[in-house]
Image (tube, rainbow, N blue to C red; front, side, top):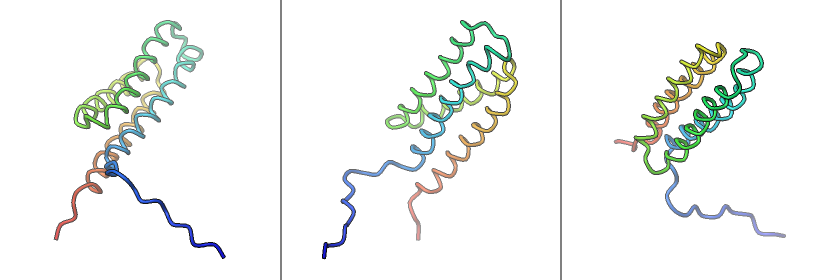
Length: 124
């Protein structure tokens, strides 16, 4: 008979939920923005150079901000909020981005508030 398997002890401090939620939203948003670039070129007939530049900057910003959440959460929250506004405004040229930007803005706000609710210390 083999002994029961036990989980290895967690070393270090676990990452706060707020950081994980915001990082996840930003990474998923980077994927969606990247997938919207060909849509902007083919369906909305944008110039490939401008679509790749604007989309690439937005994808790069989302990835950088996701990495920034580990060390500078406040700066990442401000930058991420600005990115949400940029994605919604990009709906001017690619109308589906109004919808997708709204979804990610809602996820961003939910991630911040839910994360802070879970991360706060339990009181008496």
